Length: 168
Image 1 (tube, rainbow, N blue to C red):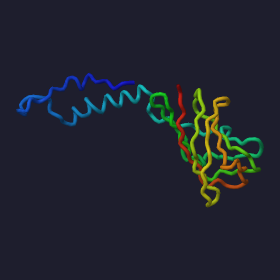
Image 2 (cartoon, one colour; image 1 turned 30 degrees about the vertical axis):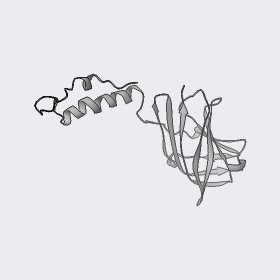
Image 3 (cartoon, rainbow, N blue to C red; image 1 turned 90 degrees about the horizontal axis):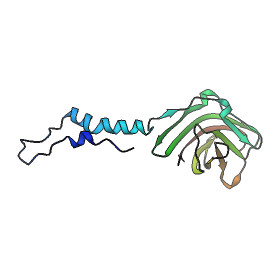
C-alpha cells in the first residue's frame, strides 16, 4: 500500500527568505512523515504477529520424534509486508529421538509457492547449517541436514531461521 502523501502536500517550501514556508518541528515530523508510514505498515499487515506454542506443530519424517516444550520456544513470529511474510523461529534445548530425515514445523500461514533458506542449528556445541524449505502441499517448514544426513538423536541446543514466504 502506498504511503498517504496528503500531509506532505500541505507543506510550503521556503522561497529562500526564511520568512515563508512550513516550519519543521516534532509535530510536523510526526504528522507528515511518521504517522503516514505507520498507517501504511498497519494497512499492509506489517506488524509482527506472534505464534502461540503448540507441541503438535513440531514433527519428524519418516520416523522418530522431536520433543519441543513450551519453554523451548524462544520466539515464533511473522510479519507480512507487501506479498512477503518473513517467518522467524528460535528454539532452544529441544530433543530428537530416533534418526529422522526431516524435522518439520507447521507454518502459521499459507502460501502458493515453495521457498528455501538456511537454518542455524547447534547440536550440543556443534554448529551446522541446514536447509529449510516451505512445502505448499502440507503447509509446513522442513529442515534437512546437508548431504541428506539423518538427524541424530540428542538435544538441539539452538535452532533459528528466518524465511520469506511469498504470498502471491
